[in-house]
Structures are given as structure tokens and as C-alpha cells.
Amino acid sequence: MSEKTTTVQIVMPQHCNGYAIPRLFGGQIMAWIDVIGAVAARRYTHAAVTTVCIDNLTFLKPAHLNDTVVQEACVTWTGRTSLEVRVDSLVERLDGSRELINRAYLVFVAIDENEKPIPVPPFVPETLEEKKEYAAAEIRRKNRLNNG
Image (cartoon, rainbow, N blue to C red; front, side, top):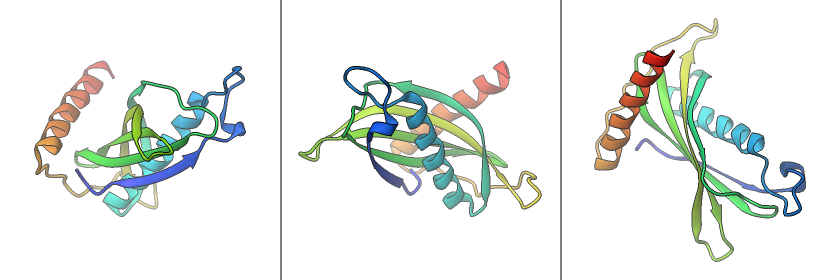
């Protein structure tokens, strides 16, 4: 995949909902996902970007108060002015092990100083994993266009 962008957060009380066992609020992780996705897109395009959609966001497991959340973002596909970024969110245990808790796919458009779309560098998948992600991104794109 493209170069990964990584961020780390510790789940603090202000990030949690009101359950008896405090869990990371879904809206908070969505905000973190949007930020790291945009950073990965900006690094790839060397331009400002705007979020077009969060195509798929799957909550697999919760994160709790005081958990360490590691997020990794990478470009999986590009069009003429748009690109897709995958963001994986993982809980990192104190022993260093990690568990995937969330995966999201976001679409961004690169824009100029007048907020007009501009071309992005093409992403050419090289590894088997990149090729699988790229093919899946093509399917997601077709579904968005057919349902949009």
C-alpha cells in the first residue's frame, strides 16, 4: 500500500459515553478517522483535500477508557481527482499486541486554493494486498456511483 500514516490516542474520560464500563464514543473515533484519513490523503496528493464520503465504517469491537488506540491510514485507490483511504483502528494492549476494532474507507477529493478539484497522482498497486484493495475499491466506487 501507499506509505502508512499512523496516530496514537489514549482513550480519556472526555472520549467516552456514559455506560457503566466507559466505552469510546463512536463519534469520537469517527472524528479521529476523518483526521488521519485526511492527513494520509494530503501527504499522498501534496494538496488540500475535502472528505466526500465515508464509504464504509465497521465497528468490530469496542475500545474502553484508558485503552491505547492506534490508527493506520493508507491510500488504496485513486481516480482523476479523488482517492480512497483505508483507516484501521486497533487497540494496543500493554504487552504490545494489537486487535482490530474498526476499519473505514473514506473518499477525498484534492482541491486547489479556490476549492476546485485538481488531479491526483495515480496509485499503482504493486503487492498482492494492494491489488486486492484496489479491486475492492473499484467495486465500492461502482456501488457509490450506482446508488448516488
